[in-house]
Length: 531
Image (cartoon, rainbow, N blue to C red):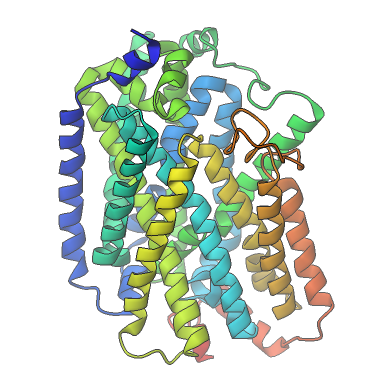
């Protein structure tokens, strides 16, 4: 039997489907229960800011530990070793930026979305439009990764090898995601994320202990066996050691470290707690849980290399993204494969639900309520528009996920991080810390960052020019780096400065008010529009 067929014939599709269904039924019941308290925009977007720091920290880890973390990083380590683990390091270090520079100040200054912070001392309509545009673009790139991960995972579990069947799987995940958002809002989505985080970290811990038991609990022995199977212990296998590939790695690292503090769905979570102190506490909880999980990915990745082998992983539907499920099957057979894969499926559902509610809230709150209706939207209409936006965003995510099916999800998420770090982070930091910053600087930075980043991605090897590109048959890779962060992020900061210094707009009183509010929390429960 060919290797691809052996790999496909894993476990019991009926058992896997039963475990999936059980998870969906339980979580939908929780979402339905949460929906009874979804009456206002605050309930829909932030769960009424009723979560504790610990609850929100667990939910943040659930939001952040996506398919990229579980499937993509484990696969990258299994295939490439040392270079794959760099994703874990970058994703974790990024939280220090969020903790030290963003979390508490953002919670004090905004209410529902990133745009609330930016418009505090700027012209509202153009800035809200720009911020909502950026939020939608970043969310789209992130959704691509999750949907691609869903396609590969469920295809592996249900023995679906054809692209048409995998496309149906992605569409099914999209429909479920939309249901979570429409029914439960942020409160329901948060409960799903908390459950998923506990299951994911527990599952990774159990698998890590199981893997180590196979090698006499000797981590060095595990690394040695993994290296013998092809997971290198030294840098260079994935990125190489030439001048261009070194720059590509630096570019990726910059995007990963700076991207988290600009991710809209992470920023929005800071508004689900009642105080800035709880926001800070939630980030500390998130760092601890996320750091623990990323230590497990090292064991899972080298364990998959040693016990499964790279040839078998790459022959599976989903390729590198199948490393963790294949390792589960190797360790515990059909039952463990079903359980771990259901956890991975829960991971994808929770993250895409969080992304969808963030994007739909940004459109409804920033564009519909504040730009179109100038803060006077008809009673109850804003939430209806948010739900309609969720339907449209879900449809776009399904189409994009089908197009990106087969790509490594950790790599796709890195592109989303580059867009977030370029378009969002400069404007957030300038708004919070530079008193001279103004509307033109904000617009230059957001739109300039988006245009530069997306253009460089479009003409990079990530899209065309190599056998592993998104469009392998095409060749228009004019930009040599697969991740544009090294160029796009500094340029976005520069454009923010350039726009600011070429405009005379400056409101010293408004900056002083924002500074007091961001540092003390005075007036943090009121909208920026009330000032």
